[in-house]
Image (cartoon, rainbow, N blue to C red; front, side, top):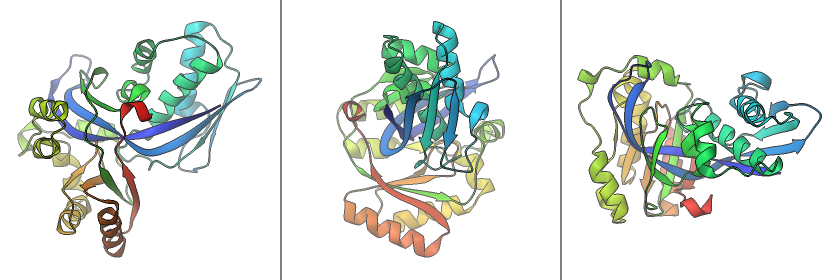
Amino acid sequence: MLERAFAKINLGLDIVGKRPDGYHEVNMVMQSIALADEVELLPAEKISVTTDNEDIPDGKDNLAWKAAMLLAEMYGHKPNVQIHIRKHIFSAAGLAGGSADAAAVLRGLNRLWQLGLSADELEVLAAELGSDVPFCIRGGTAAATGRGEILEPLADMPETWVVLAKPKVSVSTAWAYQNFRNEEVSVRPDITAMKKAVKNSDKQGILACMGNVLESVTCKAYPEIDAIKETMMASGAEISLMSGSGPTVFCFVDSESGGKHIAAVLRENFAIDIELTKTLRRNNL
């Protein structure tokens, strides 16, 4: 059985407070993109997790393992599955690659083990694994509050081309949130107005509302992020923004040829990983 694990970008990411449990209270809009890992699930005598990327942990340290064990323990099923992940999503990049893989395991094992769980039930389980995992169950376009696990499905945003650029650094999500200082934020996304713009399929309205307060942390530590954003805009991007805690930067472009042009300019000027992809509608997942 093969499941595709789609990456996400943040159209808007705001932090509105600190929770009693130590997590930050967020207000976000997240968007699925076509870049995806492939998660293969095969019946086996015992659980195993392998990947084709040496930077990604195999075995118990992989979130996919934890997803399989959680589902097995909750529903009394022997964890008899072999999981192999073919990575295409950049790792430690702000694109929810590990979360997407874990969500793919939950969806796939629900079918393989014939558990009959609804997407709502899978999202509740997913919240025990990480803040981005619930969104990755169904993806599409969604607002997220709480620590990111409380989801409000939105209408599909207008499909658009996306260029992704990841500098050769890795960023810890925990580090970014721990170093966030509200007083250092100069521009915040307007999530309320963005949700309205998404509902109205108003792409220009969406662009006007976008922002990510974690840029105040990660861009300060890694100045190349701002340099990549500026190069994207100078090369014809409609908007450029860091996704999640970074360091991946994405931009929207109005055509595939425009995306290829920006990707070529970036390759000439930076040591980065590049992907040209598109936003996804929920029914395409």
